[in-house]
Length: 167
Image 1 (tube, rainbow, N blue to C red):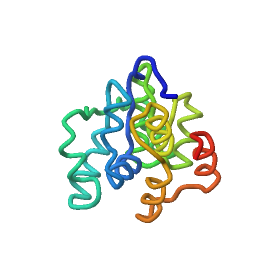
Image 2 (cartoon, rainbow, N blue to C red; image 1 turned 90 degrees about the vertical axis):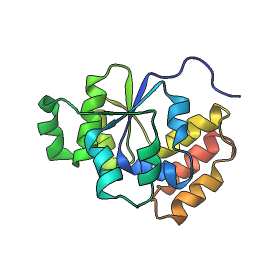
Image 3 (cartoon, helix red, strand yellow; image 1 turned 45 degrees about the vertical axis):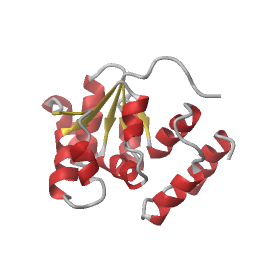
Image 4 (cartoon, rainbow, N blue to C red; image 1 turned 45 degrees about the horizontal axis):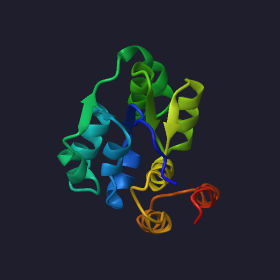
């Protein structure tokens, strides 16, 4: 049964999940699942400038529905000590924008976001939501493609998500 109701407000993406979604051709799920898709300036630069020509760089640079923002400096100094620059800026933006969720796959970054009271979701969570919303078919082929492209996913998490969607 597809999930219904209003779209959640805002998702703020870190580079890893954005690249993972482009690898499987599903970056647009973010635009379809959320009213607003924001990425920190540092994430934009990492994907489209530093990693130009790498997976995701073209797709992210062409996604005109992405909103690129800077985070306020106040919370960044603490976060920069705990996680990398893109993750720190994504968490800081999530703290600044009410009703937002941060898109992170890194375990340490997810723990930091949790400590700061920030809602979080990962690549598998996005795929799970998309499946439940009727936007995509079976998850297993996407998971297999992610793993074949070197994206690490914990087996226990894969099993839980597949069980949850009835696969």
